[in-house]
Image (cartoon, rainbow, N blue to C red; front, side, top):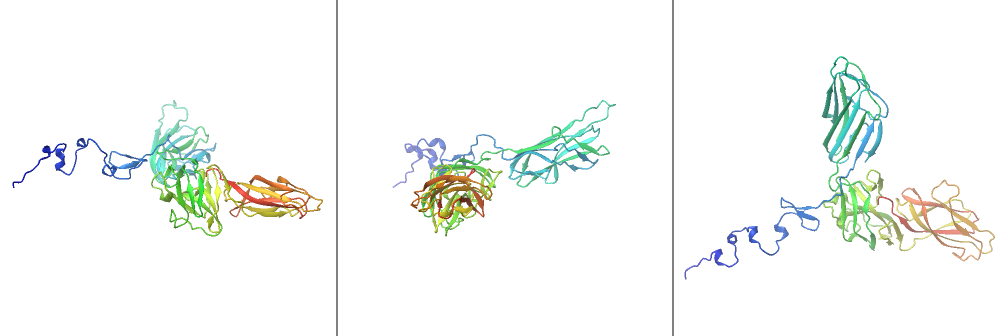
Length: 457
């Protein structure tokens, strides 16, 4: 039987390009093309297809974010400049320093990026010679502005201000200084007036860079003895890269090295565990459970970031471990966290002087809710007025209530009173002090019932 070859144009609906291993886009008239065939990278709701056929994350900013800025002046102090010498200009007066990157007469870049600088300088007398104002980067001259005033029979009057403006690309820890050079043949002075001589600069924000505390605090709930639910949230994260990170659904985070993040600390005994955004794991501004980490290391408040950090990791919550398991709490995503069950009480007898009481609250929680209840004893003729104080020095403190002499039925003499108490920190714990002015037959008991998250968390 003779072999018959069927060509593409003999098959209804088959494009001629079907004889090759590629298909012209004009031949695709219906159906859906797999995202994997369109470009490389991860295709999801947070990415778009770029012109280079890669899926890239969408980054949106509401404006240009200034993460670091400063302004420094001479503070009214003149500075003497020798002739024919490159002399560093000193800046004894800081008008502001957003981010804390200006010190010792220089600006040091805390993060990589584009920075804009402006400097103005005025001599106290006119100089009819070549003068040069310079910006130095890491000890080397990178920008220079010259002016030369020639002598013209005394018609030159005034003392012009030299100015220099530049935008520089800086790496982390690059530093910028101002230098001046004059060739008058003698010493001259820089005018120290703040209106004459100044040095300012700021970082030009890129999309995703932020200078903020929490933008939308997450509602973090107890889930089990070793796991929590982290509700949708959005936070500014300043570390090796400054960005806004977020997630739009509940995340179940399991604590410990065998949980969501292998770098987490295991739960044991009685301890506070702090929940952080693990900056080193963040490669996408949409976070997953693996981007969080728990640690027994407490955070510190970083003023330049307006938030609580341990290194580059931002703290968003704290939880207590009792007997190796998480202690249950309730919160609605606001500042207040309430214990599901009261912890054991502390007791103080009257007439014992100011007594220190440790509270079950994390180290950064300055405001703690405490439940007080008290009693007198039968046949006593003396009652007691009870007070607490938020430090170790106040003389009278704040009144809690009074126990009267009576039948000795506990809590009958002073029903439970719940107070939000300012506290003090010592050795990584929160405390108040309590005092009753009667002899020991009157007593009061205290329990921590909740605590407030601090600002920036």
